[in-house]
Figure 1: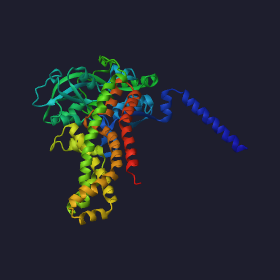
Figure 2: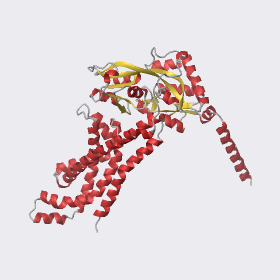
Figure 3: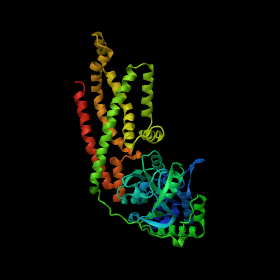
Figure 4: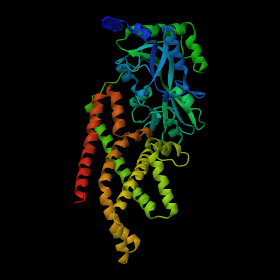
Length: 485
């Protein structure tokens, strides 16, 4: 009886504690938890937040130090939460972390969704071109391909400039690699990124400053208590010189970093009207068409390459068999994403491919390894006696293979080929990492434009389903049609 009484009291105490925590303000919850959870993306690299080269388990960067200083002033410890940079705002809204602190540019568009603190860094947008290029401003780049990051202030500037083809990237180094290789005419990114990743290359130069802005911390719009606390901590860091010390240590302090009283809380960047998802339907259909073209060409390459690999592995000599086996194991054993990076960026100094060609080759070469295994199974399914009978009738091995063995092997492999085509259609979304704007990439672009992911996600899924469903029905029909009686 006494145990039951104690258990009841403990339950009541626990419920009371949970109710008190729920009623407590944000700062009380943070202090009860002991951490300030801040979101960022390690892919942004140096000097924002990145892994210490001397200790991979440790993060360093000027924003790491700012986060730690903020947390210390709030009486807690800083806890980093990795998140894709383009999805920082929706992840903050979901409650994945308390504050964004990762080169988030203050714009009126973002003010619709988050509350910004006072700025902690003033930056400029730098146009970088090849050293011999004649460009000196955005107006001179009309009709040219210019690279930047999706969802950035630079992206807004470029889309507002008429006649420029904007090429979107997920990393900060890739656009400068493409610029060096002549795939782009220019790159517009924040001066921190330009100085660290672009202007260190002797073949590139800064052509112009085309805009300016501020980095600030962001919290949820209804979290006024945390916003006030972060504002107060940043103001204290600016007053006592802690912020200047951090920026100086990372080589970022310059004349643009004004005293705290001079830093504006607003931006003059005009907010474009928010389009609706359905108004973007033509762009989605264009992305879907691009997906189909890439997938069809890659599958054709995979079918031809897979057949060659399978025949080499079964009927070739020692060397062809060995090479075929190595190819299949390498391409099946490594991620297709890695293969695309190596093909497009890694081989660029030796073989410069455009994004479309690299996408088709990368997917085709990867799936050729899988098709080879399907053909191998098909060839093994043909009775050996049929080949021997054909040879006994005076046919050459090549003729027997073409007329007797291959038709039967292809019948066995055909349903599997149809299923692989469906898989390749979906895997084509990976080619966005090498700047191809296919269906999934168009979805992410639209999600940023319309300030939401649900509508674009549903539309993208519907189009993928419309593309893959007929193929899946065809695969099932082939399985039934070609199955042994």
